[in-house]
Image (cartoon, rainbow, N blue to C red; front, top):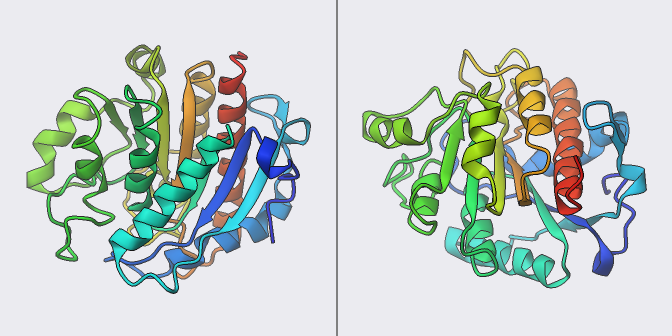
Length: 281
């Protein structure tokens, strides 16, 4: 099974989709390991043409590199090392990686790989949760709810923008306040990211649960689909060098409609990566 429009040759792809069925530190409803395949399945319902970017992925070189296999790797650090290697391989092939998860911890591995090529890397996080705990609810310092804290220890200061955040511990609140920008402040976010290579991490629980109930830790008062799309389209021309879309959980709710929504966001992320690669507006 593959994203149907992903027909590019792997060594020459502009964007390489890599499914990462990671689920190890989840503390909400389990099921993120099943997310990538369900999104792929329902991508059949998504057109390759984006009415928002007004571009067609059929005209692009998109490849689907398949699923990472974690069965023989017992620890989270071993799994992250495999993800890091695969992202590094993607860069070697001069493709932009798009990771489809899977729990949010995968972003740490991606950043570890990307920073070697892009030392000035910035990260734009669309999320309901700050993910800035030092120790997660699972008891681990490497977890889905500590991932941005660990990323902040790798990137340069002032390299992270959060938007959509509406759930945090007291410990996280002071840290998140300094990083948070309103999702409608597109011009402000553009100015902050200008001239930087940027990794986009999109946790699907940024969306209101009425739109995206199929996540492990839904939070009320979320963003609308239109607000997310307006932000992505408004950031055309920013140098996005890779992205991930995470935390889809088909066991958390009736998943058919949410899977189509997630599949459409994969398409929009592909558009953002393809056209930032070519500097198109």
